[in-house]
Image 1 (cartoon, one colour):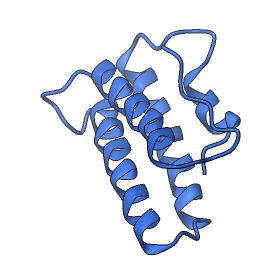
Image 2: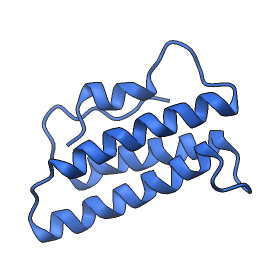
Image 3: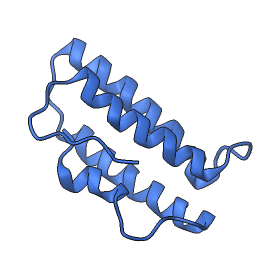
Image 4: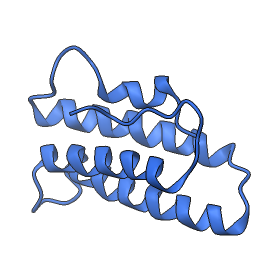
Length: 101
């Protein structure tokens, strides 16, 4: 599912400081998730767990893009990173690397 290139979208050299940057990153994350879902072939139990991870990622990207007006975009980024890192706790995925903070 998650490879170094996909988790690397969080590891840019420049931190995200403006809301527009969070929104652009949220869009990129959503595109990656869509690609993963489109190519996903899991057994039902694993698929259900992946959908929980994806739901948490979606909640984070909503915060990042301003869809949740009560939440700060930076907290959305944190939620996305925690969800991606949680994936590693639920799946035995060779080559998976958690997002560093």
